[in-house]
Image 1 (tube, rainbow, N blue to C red):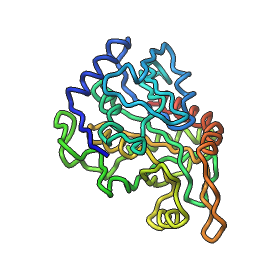
Image 2 (cartoon, rainbow, N blue to C red):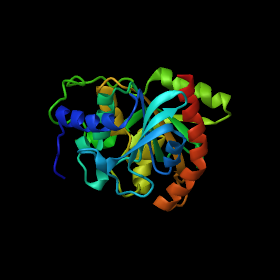
Image 3 (cartoon, rainbow, N blue to C red):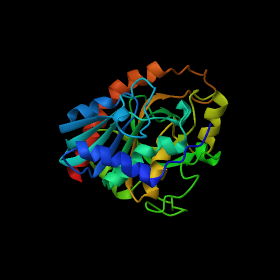
Length: 281
């Protein structure tokens, strides 16, 4: 895979095209994972900018990722909603995968709510749960594919950013408070990021559990790293679409169709949680 390092000038170029088409300045960004696109339909006074209309913006090839930037008002906040994302396994460089977050930062967002569909590793979880991400394990980055590899973007952040609190404590507490008020059972846990696109083997599931992961997916962490590099506060939420078999039990087959079906159950709860978090900000 060839690295493609994007520059601050390219972030500005893309942001300028978006800004010309929207009547407001978004302060909160949302990234919607597999099956969660319907939340964008609740945005009021919305302006839709297809990804292919934005210079340098990557477009997804994965079912369930619509490929539109929806800007408007949600929960009383001015939001920019990414209706779908791209992934490293699609052949993009990490700089391209995280390019949308950079554009949102140039547009002026202060907070980012990032969601995903994830496989459950914690046997206390059930399919349909929502997990508040407490921390993550960047297995892709540990292998060398960190989105900050390459020239540092000094205009946005330091060469060596701190990652002691990738997920904002106040936003995590707010999500917990809202979940309690709305009678939504909110799990907590650590998210492990793999490159994909193949699902995990039984040995890999055993390894991930051993190192402390509660859920596993193929996205999110690169976006969070770039967000934190640029000083953006992050709330991470995983929709648990399936739970891996307990140790010693026969392994269960996982499919993308299963992920999308479970996401349809998760979506209403995720929507309620996010809208009420936005309202409470």
